[in-house]
Length: 219
Ligand code: HEM
Image (tube, rainbow, N blue to C red; front, side):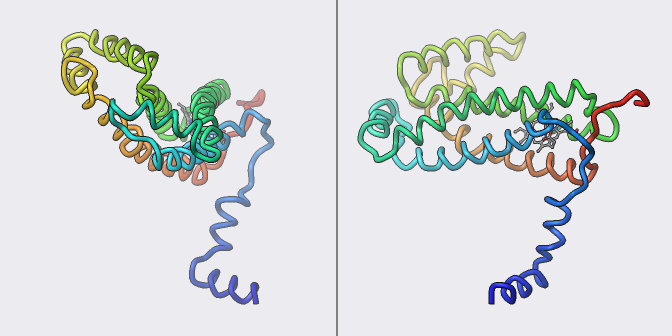
């Protein structure tokens, strides 16, 4: 029965072809450093799932943000676990993406024909940092408030356009309810959409071009 269902779906969706192209590709002899990209993708998925659960109770308003997080930690079943995974997952993702970037640089995988994979990677790295920056404000505690005050202040020192960037980030001259809702929107909609789409392009390139090999003497 299961075989029949599979054959029916396979004929219509081309599941075997997808499996062969995506998962059963030939790869050169590589090492553990080549697993960091996949690890980054898994961490992104983990962040997306735990983040969705957090939005069930989190309230992005100055009056309620802090208390809603206290409630997630102490009142919601396994809330502490979901928040803990999201919290540590965020730092891990930055570390893994950075190490993956170092790996591709060290093995010169950014060269022809993989320049575009590298370019999408650079944007992925910046947007991953953006996730950390926007997420940090959401607990709306003293540390979050002042870290974001300093962060947006630093952005304000960019020559010529600094004060414009600062007021776009803050939504005014100071940190306020506007800053919190805008950071929340960017954190849960804008940046994840960009990262999701870019991971799609990035992995399409990896599949299309094949993975590079560890350079040998002839290279
Ligand atoms: C969310 C972030 C990222 C994800 C999910 C991701 C995912 C992947 C995956 C699954 C691979 C296959 C090979 C491997 O795992 O090493 C790969 C390859 C590659 N990535 Fe990323 N990546 C990310 C960020 C970056 C960054 C920041 C850069 C560089 C600026 C980068 C540049 C590359 C390059 C050049 C390759 C081709 C490597 C080769 O063919 O050996 N990636 N990426």
